[in-house]
Image (cartoon, rainbow, N blue to C red):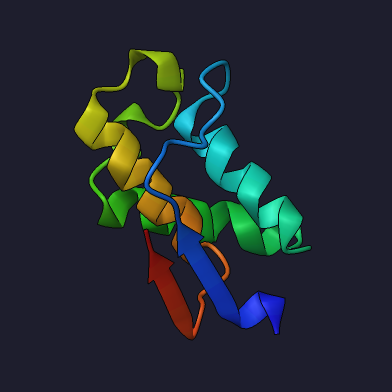
Length: 86
């Protein structure tokens, strides 16, 4: 059941010491998604939210809007059937 649900919290949960890509991959790890699958999916989602050019920058350098888009990419990493937006 957990694998079919995604969550995008109101408050930022991204680790500011990690890059955007590392944060999305970290979320994929929680769902047990293998790196062979999660890495290309993470890049696809970062492209979707227009963060692929900034994917290797630390989140601490992101604007507020960039952080929100990163949270959205992280919430979609498991391709949920249901996405909760807080």
